[in-house]
Length: 76
Image (cartoon, rainbow, N blue to C red; front, side, top):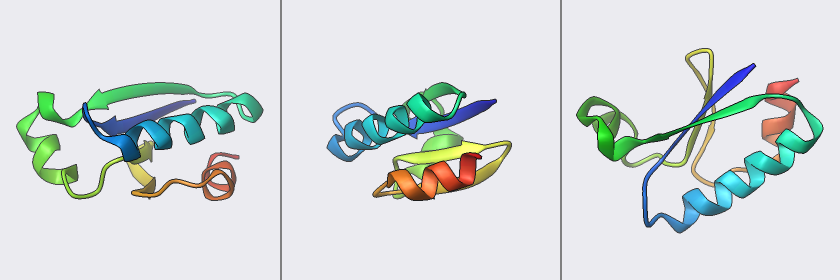
């Protein structure tokens, strides 16, 4: 299973979110594809106010303040 993680440099909330996502990854097997929104104008425009964003199969699982329980439930 592949999960996309949208973030950008110098974003403390993104660092915290990735830490949370990696905790979930310890219990549920999946790959994390980290995408810097600043490398694509369309993605930047879509997610700039929402980051970090966790997406699986085109569906947003959670954004902003990420929490373990919500992500784990969405990824089982």
